[in-house]
Image 1 (cartoon, rainbow, N blue to C red):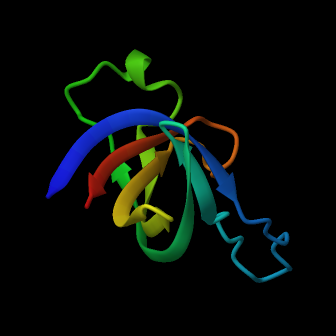
Image 2: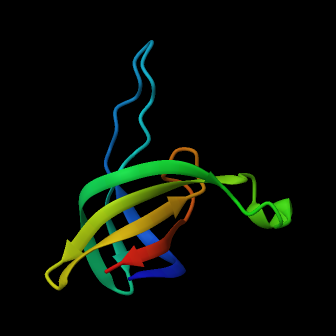
Length: 105
């Protein structure tokens, strides 16, 4: 079952090297996140994409970015694993707060 949360989470990202000339800079990948006091280690990144925010919302509510980047990850702890959608508004994937959008258990 998929549940929608839209809750803030603390996300740790992997360090990435700067892009070399002619190479595309890689977006930092999440490696773990803290949700409701539990640390969940990301075992695999299943997919990632950019999505536009709801068109009917006031752009002032969105801050500076009408898009956010979403990562679908398989993560877990000793209590079990699940599939989670994490989102960040920051272009660099680091500086803006992260949000847990959905969880499938």
